Amino acid sequence: MLEVKGATKRFGGLLAVSGVSFSVKEGEVVGLIGPNGAGKTTLLNLICGIYKPDSGNIHFLDNEITGLASNRICRFGISRTYQIPQPFEAMTALAGVAVGVLHGKKRSHMSLADAALEASYYLEFVGLFAKRDTLARHLTLYELRMLELARALATTPRLLLLDEVMAGLNPGESSKALEMIWSAQEQFGITILWIEHIMKIIMNAAERIVVLQYGQKIAEGSPKEIAGNAKVIEAYLGGRHA
Amino acid sequence: MVSLEFKRDRLQLRWGDQKYEWEIEPRYWRNPAIGVLLLAILPLFVYSYPNILTMFTTANLYAAIAIPLGLQMIGTARVNFGPQLYLGLGGYTSALLNLHLGWSPLATLGATILACGFLALLLSPTTFIAKGLYFSLITLILPLTFLDVTFIYGDIFRGEVGLTGMSALFNLGKVRWNYLGYFYVSLLLMLLYLWVSDKIGRSRFGVTLAAINENEDVARMMGVDINRYKIFYFVFPSILTGIVGWFIVHTFRTFAGVTYLPLDFMIKILIIVIVGGRAYVYGAIPGAYLISAVEDSLRALGPINYVVFPLVLIGLVLILPRGEGLWGLYHKRHHRDYFPLFHVRR
Picture 1 (cartoon, helix red, strand yellow):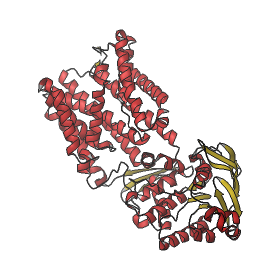
Picture 2: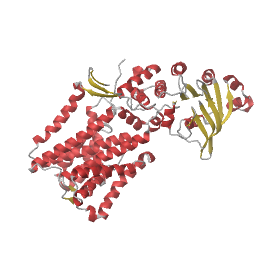
Picture 3: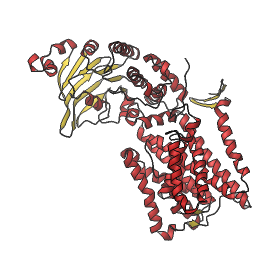
Picture 4: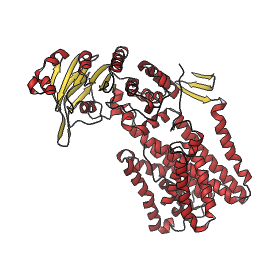
């Protein structure tokens, strides 16, 4: 479904992502982990068109999407959430999701009322329907993350890129969020590429894990293989523990 | 194929896969109707004072510049400091074509639209290349450059004195009737702009504009073709501003760049937008009426008004609720809702 081949991105002298290749199959949940500054979010930004890769290419559903504008990539069916929630602060939750409904795919004749109705379905799904008329700036962190999820789902993605959805949530909230992601995958049949720092969650959730360090892929495999991989342990805990 | 349906609060027409709706519930149109009626009967009280009537006409024109500016500020997420460039371009285009080639007002209207549209299209890439202050600086400089051009090529533009003797839009016989006619035509122009902006704000495009105004990158990631939107909402308001220039030429029958192109004219418009309520197009009308009334009453003070006017403006900006302005006083309960709140019931 998604194929990244030799993706490289440089910021001045810093090699943020260097020659990373991996693929995601339809229906999979793939985890993307690595220590801080490993280039995970940069890789995500390359996939969804915020940055253009310096070399390498990215294919999605047999279309080359390397360096396309993110609105076109979104139309192919890739959607994302942000590490730091980026809501439309002065807009209500319903209006924010309606933007995704109207523009996620070509819907030139859809009226605002119809879009609001469909948006309310996604809000109901993530449990924010009661907050539909609340301005996004008045929502809590958990609600913001759920709003981001609703917004991403509203664009009818086939591949969802999750960027540390669990960061900053308490255990109760993160288990609720995890359930939400599972039911989203089940209901909408989406594939997930998931960046996460909380090992307990990602090791249970992902079927396959890709590990990055200093912009390079150091390991790939099932959670079990990754947990026993010497290189990964070294990257996370230092050489003495490997 | 075609079906007309009467719902609880709206009339719905379906045509193929298109749907048109008209709200018929009184609470949606009662206040706008009262507002329009007030504006419409206003001149009847001051019929015998042509200077006040002219002041109201000017207020309408200020509002007709401020409304598209508000739309443009939301749609491009940038503050344009130089919409008067298009006012000047529209005015000079129609004035020169009318004077030298004898084009009728209708023909010059077409030319104005074309000229403003062309220039705005040429400059529209700045809306996604330049950000924040840089965009404001670029737009700030252009009208001043144009002002210089009107001085340098004084034999064409008559920079100091302005062009005079253009043909009038209509002639009702009596001078007073003409003033009244100009007021109503300017009112119609302003209300037309308001109606168009309102329609845009209440449609799917309004929500998209709000999203662009909030966060461009996120909106783009959600599939919004930002560049196309920005080009349109840069060019379209520019054309609307240009038409005001055309209107000035064919009603006041004199047009001087010195009046409309300098910075103080622009500041007046920005103050109207701020006093009226930033990011809400309706606020432009009370704002424009207030500012032109203040300006006109201070003119009696003589030269000192150049000092007093800015002071009054600063006072107004300080006193009125921040960011909400006059419209905010009326719409106190709503936050910057430059797109309408819409509701879904369970």
